[in-house]
Length: 251
Ligand code: 6PG
Image (cartoon, rainbow, N blue to C red; front, side, top):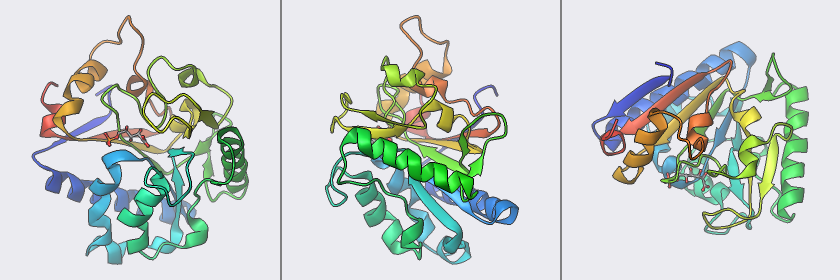
């Protein structure tokens, strides 16, 4: 479909298994193709849906030494703060698998939001130069092997919120936001040029509180403005949706 590949699961168990298959296949393909796997995570319920990855067979078959882990968005809080997406991913996944700490790119939590965004973009630019992260062929953007995104009940993705000027950012790879409608207010986020340059984007959306906005997202673009989730459209890549039945109930 024009929306990409939409997968709807009976329950969370089926979804988490299919997501683990999908992630390990993408990792395998990237390692065969380029020798490394660049993956970007988000916050929220996403990490809990990745839990099969630290169980057999996935924990054994995945070549964790090739993983390079980034955040599509992060809250500007200390790394051990309960609001930190890094902490969420570390506690829920990264501490349970043999990932190489030097290949986990968390934000510098001693910086202000603006400086942290600049610093993260600077680091990313070095990794694109050395091809740890691939480069897009048709634009000056990184081409992540896989970006995993959740969606808020307002239709936001990463920290790109409906009606916010950052949804139109064209130049920056990483932007700061200091007025996030979802707390905490200070965050950094991938911009659309980065999201839409990825080789693969997976939207992982569960729960009945997402049904209304998903219905809107799959319908016509609204006069009231396009929802960020409707702007996800990888130009050279693939888009896959992992939905559970409650989230997909109005499609
Ligand atoms: C963050 C996010 C955000 C999240 C969605 C969905 O706030 O850190 O990365 O984009 O993925 O708000 O969150 P839930 O899956 O918890 O609803």
